[in-house]
Length: 272
Image 1 (cartoon, rainbow, N blue to C red):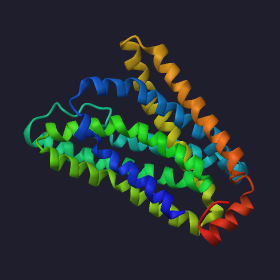
Image 2: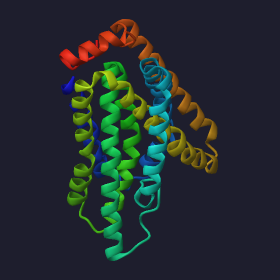
Image 3: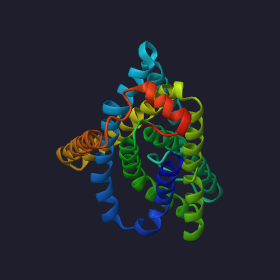
């Protein structure tokens, strides 16, 4: 199980380099924000409502909803604490040393968010490889415009393209740390995997509903593309739901027999 999780995490980390190729090309960036973010929202909602939440509630019983709520509230608090260098906020208004400090804070904040992405990706793979792939896709869609913007922030702070790319990659690499730690913990404490899936569900739900969706709605309303944004979100939701349904049907039941899943986790470190 560790190998596909690490591969997925490395893929996400390498996306930090997309800014090298796309930053400054306004047409590409505008198109990315217009269509990729709504698709990411749809993917996140599909994974949360049709996979993570059902798995958590089924395994956790009467306490299953608790980690979901805790995950949502925790990431709301985290986002509030890190708001000064969150990627949706304005980073480019300071000069000189203050701008360097802002860029450094951005890197630290991004490292924390990427660590959380690693937790989510690893958790999804433990539910089912198809869920892991779908979640990785959603995270990738979310990361692309974020990494382009953050690369621009580092350039505006005075870093060279090479140094900005390396620093962004280093910050993004925390996704690998989060994925590996989660895999080791989930393998050792299989009976409590539902707590991790609940926290992951709360995280993705917060990102989709309270972070990405309001900003996307405001931007699409201003440029008169609300309908197009809505359609892109629905396409992402329907596509990921159909993909997961197809994967479960052709690859077998993934984890609804939790006793078997827990035994497999304990003995092999992989879901059934």
